[in-house]
Image 1 (spheres, each protein chain N blue to C red):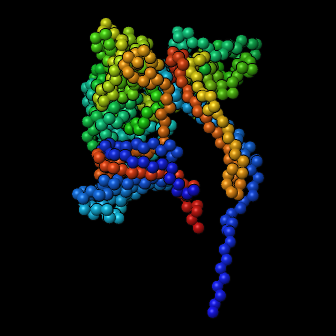
Image 2: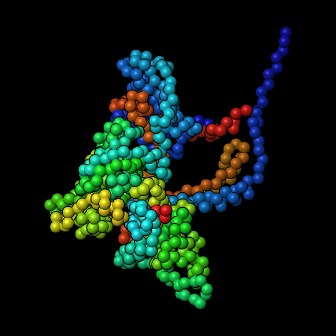
Length: 234
Length: 342
């Protein structure tokens, strides 16, 4: 007679001990960037889909819209001034420094970093390094043309294959004070949520961190924002 | 948990393509056409499967033949390159690959010849570009009608005036979805006085609602009715049916210069901005009087992630009246580069 012994035992499939603090710190920093970029992208998409458009028409690349020119900037600035739109920034007074020039009071022009080369070719363009004072230069600022100061971002608005010649159209949102707003609801503004490992499962192995927010961007006065559309020079 | 189903649902097919919103995205998708599975007459597709890693537009499809009712499957096929399903993320690029236009007609509803209409159907939106002979329509999104498969399509909404030249070449791309935020600006192709009101036609359906207010921008003398530039009107009626895309607004334009659509020569030699309507708010009293939603002008993020299914006897969106069930899920691990193969 054969005796058969049967035993049962719990199986440990995997057990990993880890130090998550440094990873969490880095993740929190990246999530912060992600949160603010997401807000920017939503605002960008709202402006692209709903704001009034003005094509650049004074360039010479043969497309519609054309590349950006100072005449096109003047058209938009004139429209904003005509709507009694308030400028964001005061001018920067000229100083006796080599290679600098006074900067006008200005509206903001929000665009893509793809525009940097073309901006340098626009008549009257002043790179931010040529401002008489660096005190008022904003992080994303590239320079100024007339009464527009250009703030550029890699997530600036562009529409693929939207020009008459099938080229990418760049949306430059020329905005005045209180042209649009991001509206939040009480209790639903940006929340960073950290859950320690004790909440992750029976073995308390993993922590989580994330964010959530609910807000809606909306134009407050349509006459105080204009989407200046352009293509790149040939 | 692997293979967790995160969404499921059913719908009754209308015979048109169907888009399903799947909020959190998906790694796999199953579709069952219950009507087709028990149909006794025709060859029909009744089960479809997609998972991450398959070629764009492809599904594995199970079909039955005639009276092979309820059997496992009669044959299996993989649709590729015909966009049986299309993944949709409306925060991304809305355009399909471009197709060539080889000729066009010179009238208020231009007809464009193309050798490949793809999945285009009446009511779809296309973007025109590089239109030799019709530079005035380059860069416009237009609704199409009278699609003749792999032959031609017609611009659905009549222009105020003909382009004044016939297109000899150009390109079109299908526009798969609207910009994320509602209400959107729209391009104007015609304005006609109607008593003390004006009928404004757009190149695509506006989606506006009665009671909303819009600002009219007519930025060039080439459009004729320059007097209406920057005027604000309240929308009284909306007709977004194919070929109409028109709203009535409370602006009396009867004494204005007639609206014209710029000619090919106008735009080819003198770039201009487009005539457009910009939504700016709502007349609450008028909305109440018209029994419409007084908050319809609220800026609304209508973006979504989802999938568009093509209709037809062998398409996952089925035929008119079919009962269709679907489920979609996200997998914990997705290996598309054989990294898990030992």
